[in-house]
Length: 116
Length: 113
Image 1 (cartoon, each protein chain N blue to C red):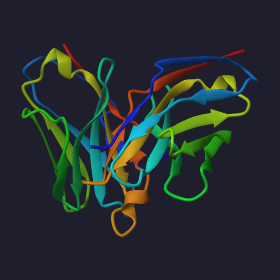
Image 2 (image 1 turned 120 degrees about the horizontal axis):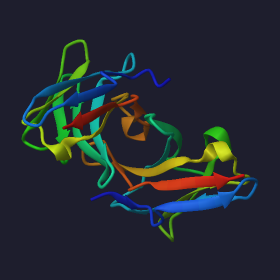
Image 3 (image 1 turned 90 degrees about the vertical axis):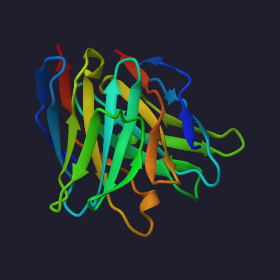
């Protein structure tokens, strides 16, 4: 158990809908990262938040957004869903600070999104 | 930009034989390299990392990785494979510009009894 929790485990929805995925980082970790894992594109970095502020964006669509709250949990919002958005969505957390570049990320179990 | 490549989509080995999962990297500056494993329907689990120092890094579950600067490689190895090692393995590099992790495409390891 990595200490990172994600809810829900599974989500089935229809095209055009909006969903919210939730992530709670490990205790003490200020950084949260979101990744999308699909069969054809592997593991894609979406976005990184540190202590409530956006730090970096990866291959995140404009229909997707995220935020990190004062209690450090994070939510990934996916809107106007398309069939191609079906994937596993992972969040990860890590320590931030001096030497944090050396630190591994700890991954949650993921949310499997199916868009029908 | 920092990147890693995993040249093999699939690696098959027999139980008890040594295994190698390959990774090459491309970075500007010092490489900070990681290996993760993903079992079916699970998140990624950290195996080991190279930051500096000894080129042979030991990690979890009996895995080790060899850092080779001249060949820009960071291959994952295990002396004797187990059927339970069958999983998807990802190599990753830390992007120094924004502290993010860039992952390879993954290599599916199958260990046959």
